[in-house]
Length: 233
Picture (tube, rainbow, N blue to C red):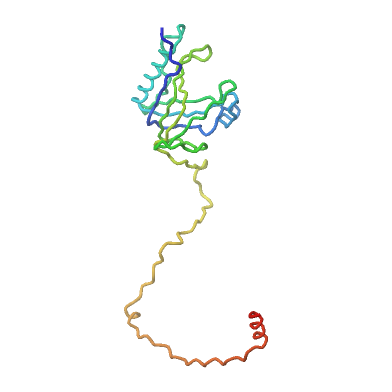
């Protein structure tokens, strides 16, 4: 009997990134009720990105996951697992891919991010929600008490095919009160005043020329002459 493959690769293309956390590891803080940056060896530390896909993409991905499960499932595992995708009202589906910060004492390699031309993005690149991405990694089937049965997507790399710039939004609503006067455009052209035809044809009176008196020649300053003489020494 042939050995079961150690890993089953997957790839999902042209999906919408949701809440990406790929620049560093994060963990969920139960007190703050949100994910916070953490060390790779902290409990729950991981790189993660959720994504939105259409029905055709979801069908293709689920097929890859089922194949991986069938090839890796143990003899005592259930024959199949439930569809893990979250269906949205618009008919789209959501799922996520992640990678632990470490397995035992060994830190993992952060998922590599590339642009559309396959150029490697900076290590601190911040992917944004709404960007379009491709995700590559391996399917990891699992079956354990207290964990359940299914297939997780352990990502290795992300390609950004369309980047949506990060936007800062105000937590407040517009209200009456102070409004900043930011001024107009200082480079905006100024409308010149209209000139009537009479003003244009008005006789121009030339100013009278005043003869300039010739300047008198000042007598030489003996002290300046002495300084000039010193330069030649």
